[in-house]
Length: 154
Image 1 (cartoon, rainbow, N blue to C red):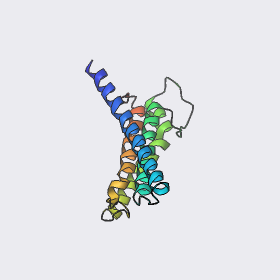
Image 2: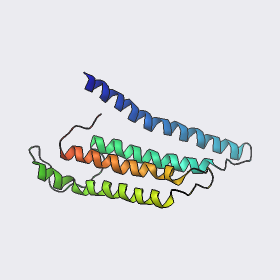
Image 3: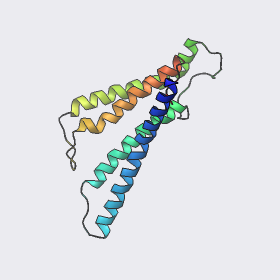
Image 4: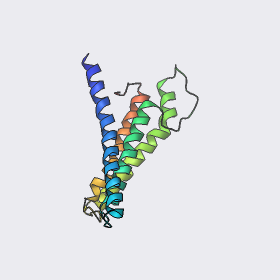
């Protein structure tokens, strides 16, 4: 029973994590259009924030699709229901490798640009690149759960 409640809570958090940036992006872009055309004064930070939100939404959405099994992945071999561990590992190895390399590259990027700040908002670039690291790490964990036949939370 507790597992069902936890799954439902995680499901709501994931959907809110995607719906909230969509609403925020909509408000920012509508405000950008209003300020540019109605007041003849552009919001200098609007485009930068919208870009960062869009990138974050893309990575969050890819995790949701990966968990559901609807994200295009690289699979070696024909899936069959009675496959062994090694077969599952070989089938999912390219996707696992991709997510590990994504996380590693994001970590290296964050390490190199940690002291830099974004131009308009002044955000630390490590905060801007953090969704890439999170996506790579969580994506690798989701693929590992598929290899080990553990059910990811829905």
